[in-house]
Image 1 (cartoon, rainbow, N blue to C red):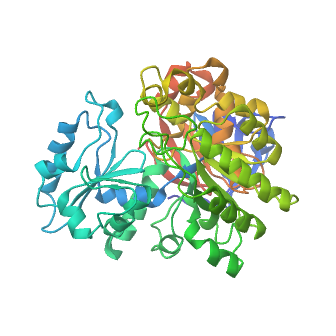
Image 2 (image 1 turned 30 degrees about the horizontal axis):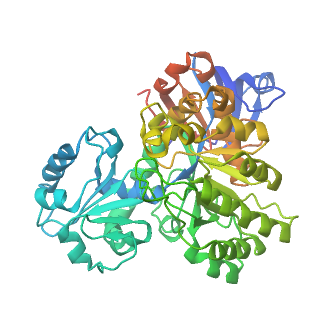
Image 3 (image 1 turned 45 degrees about the horizontal axis):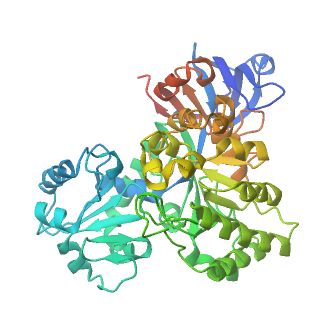
Length: 507
């Protein structure tokens, strides 16, 4: 990373300030990690150094408001199956990867997605046993809410046959059933620094300067070796830490500029892909189930009430319409009990809200932390949403336009499916219902200023204005000046964190 202390003038074709009164300028002055001035005022400062970025566009650094940074770190030592094109392709990749393991080492794989395969079926225990009977194998579906394990893994981890969420015959583990396997995924202390460095580099090359990590722990990042962590992380604590956070009076935002405490993450349901999202009506492709809530509405309400009463931000995972209704009701009761707090509670995903739920979110000031890339991945005709939910509910998934028109604040993230703000911005313009599409400018705002607001950092991040952190990304083209279909192909040339160049693809 280059020195960011000397006053430096950057000139580009267009610099997005995210200031409604002066949205675009050509000049920006940076010193000591902060923006000194923009526009003609910046040029008039006479900075001792100048950087001409030519025809590039400069945007505020993207803030991924929902990503699993810890999972991304672990991914350095796991097999990525996102490019697998069939179940047999997965098995072939497993056998090839197994040859690189040491005796007794576990094989963890991630991001398989059967909805893109010809057979459109989940992997099973028998599949994995056939490929690798003597290696413990665990594969996480792309959504993270369904894992499949072989016999060797289940026996070595001693997962009880009566574990809730375990389908032993098929080797499927849903939701909490995966807990018994998670400890085998943790990197060794020797690998931790490399894993955190890998995760940092992975997001920096996508123009991301800050992330809101969901469902993780603070300690590994706080204790990371110097230089390993190169992006700013807000860590959402699991609800198992709620009682301790309340007892100790730990405030949201506690920490440093690079690592701080975010909200308390609570789960209401699962995912559409795993058929565990809680719906009012059964799944179209499996009428035997409508998914289900992770806990009772009463238990959820108690967690929400406790967090709100202690001034802790909530990030509540809710995807299905039934789950969204339960969460909205719990949030309403908590907020009405102490209405004057700047809570900025969030519903993570909020994929299938009806109009009443949308209006309630707007009235309560609850943020919708959404993932536009889900539209690009599964929201097209013939995609997983249509298959799982049928034609009516498919078209109502991820109603971005309705949320914006109702006045709900949006924060954009990726949930790692896949990570990539430019892909997400493109996806936000591609909803199958034209009324639910956002403009490019709206989508960029959600990935910058909107996510900053969701992290209580609207005076620090998400804009390129005097006094703000000099977190910015240099793009090969301006997203608002290219055909919409080309947005996802725009290249990230450079990424700056606190005025220091943290990624450079220009050589």
